Length: 553
Image (tube, rainbow, N blue to C red; front, top):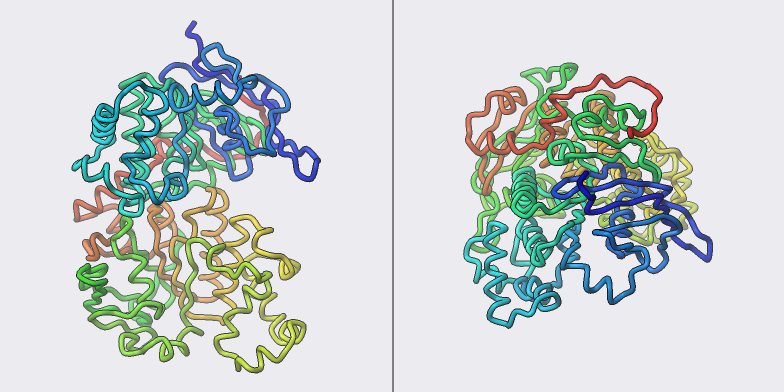
């Protein structure tokens, strides 16, 4: 029988907060064979990233292994000293971290950062290290490798930065790679490129991989074995195909039920009347930044009560279009009509009255909240735009609550949050709860239109499903009109009436969701659709019912 590269037995991990130890991982165990991909899946807080960090000896100062064993190539890692870890990490065990934005030094060239691994773990001289980095950059799919070597992180796209991290991770020819959400937040085509690259490197060198992800589609398509984590435990474990096709644990079934099918369209969506009022009309919109055309002569319309989704890769012009629609960015040329008003002729001050009727929900709600505000302040903030500033400043918070409290509470209730959240601070909320607060803030003025800019991209699959269901319910109840911007095409299929596909600032295809998803006419649209992870989930398509059962053996 093959000896595992990695063996975890009875592992328990805790974090010490104010001298009290809080257990977060409880008695887990698994093996990883040579060349095998093990996917650890679960929601935020399930313990999967903590497990990965423990394997690499990268727990924070207040984290500690309280029980169990982690064995790599016969070495007990739980007893390693700092020097032993420095010798091991980057050479035979390495990490592909989740966020290249914070994992790369912004003031150093990316070639030098990859070279650091070679400086620590090889005897190569400076010229040989530079040549090896060129080889690694070619390996991860870069062209113009000398140019890439000399660039800084901010000069690269998200996908390119992730390739740099992969080059650093494989520089020492490791036997084991811990890939912690390596494609989180990437567009579907870039995600596919990165995952294809990891697959190629694994096949070439028989490297074992622990893939940590909340994306069940990625886990289903890319792993051999899957471990489902929930509340610090592995509740189900087994060959990926078996777990996906016949999940035994309630939590696994719930996760699978939350995943939108890759190309299944909502059969129960009500048809928007063809004579419905046009609320947004875009004609030949162009937005330039210097010599660069971020949006290049696009035209589309949005009718009352419908959802029009704008899809495309990063840099396609989606978010710039949203900012023009909401008066946050001026147009260079063209015409944009919102509720009968030509907004290209309005400045920010002139657009202000329209903000009652068109609101935006951002991708990252936390960064759009004032950190000093509690939930009441966050949700009530739109009232400030229409209140007398002197009145607002003159009256106490208690007085403002007396005036606006009922409407804030009603907005929270609409977003499925209890009224007592009004006193909490955003830092005390989960990602899904923060997004609900952001939706409540957008609803408090009772607008007609919501522009939703990647509202679920940072959320776990089950939380994302809850937000999509909430948006669907609100649209049915209030007759809301949505402009939904997303790179999650499965979510687009579930929520949309019509789809606009953008590339390099231009619209390459638009039509009903059925036309675009089932009969695409542009090669780029086809590429987007074929890049969606989750083909194995579609083939398995288990019936989700409530059953009892524990982990597979």
